Length: 301
Image (cartoon, rainbow, N blue to C red):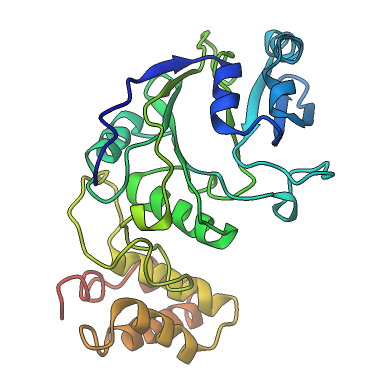
């Protein structure tokens, strides 16, 4: 995956970051949450309003009184006053919240041949980061599928995989910490990426087979990365538990994995998931994935 070698990375203030994320007339969601009172205030305003000194001073006052400061990562429709999926104007960014093994995960992202270099990297606390890519050509389902895949493969926070997500705004203190830490943002690329730039395997048989292309590529992964067999097993249990037809679950997994390469794997996965769910009330074998199934498809059997 090519990197933007023509751009010189630089640090960004909160105002600069907002202007880089959004167009001047975009509606931006800003959220402040006080950790002491648990009071949350959300404001939706134009980019230029958010970046203006008066608004920044208002944020600084809240931050000084114990509030964390966040920004919505996608613009809001004109006339909307809440940050719901229906009110998202379009997908402008995909992102990762690296809140565990953050340094290792960030390095894996930088080394990966399967995804582009991030546009922005935020240091949110020692060893923890948020990573943002500017994108175009995604609908919400495609973006959220990619977000789940990125979180799955690079150790990101799986809760931060929705299109309405707010991430930290640089220049303000992280009030989650007992020690004073100012969130920092680095602008590392001006490129805008399309779905084809993310050549990674999707995370679930429920979603389209490919993001980018179908070539398997080597990449650096966190040490706690789950195998695809483990994800298939977990998916089968979730789908069956919510009442999906077993034959449909088999078809999804088989289509996702490839009928020719793994002709019986999908059916065995679903059948064993059914057995576990039927006997899940305290049976020891219901914990985890059967050892003779994990890795079977990954070994090409």
